[in-house]
Image (tube, rainbow, N blue to C red):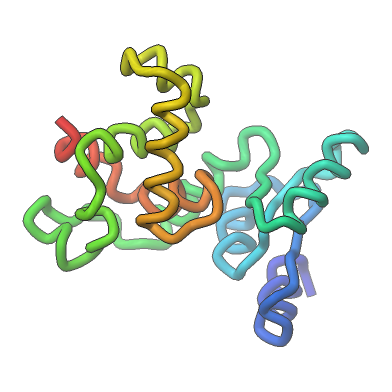
Length: 168
């Protein structure tokens, strides 16, 4: 079986196990399916040893790990697997009460997280301190019940146009 099927089987039998996929495949669908089936991370085999060791340590702690350029692939694969039409603004409550409870500023910060922006970039763009950005990110993670910004971004990415509209 391939790594995606193995990930699915392992997570079904041992849900607490953290799986960090190391693969030569960077196909959108392959990356997205591995993450959907519960992989904690996905790296390509050309990842250097130091980065791999760090990714293993962080994955063990529960932080999602994605190699360079793979976040976009995971998100695009997940988007392709979901309904292509985004829900209208008035249906956001019914589809995602978690996103509705965010403040407009938190929605704005979440849009930056979806784009993969750093705290420094967010702070400079919004004219706020990095500490304030960190506070917003922490609040977003708590409200959405995620451990890290990648999980929150992947969850919210299908709603990006709505989030942009609601954060203004």
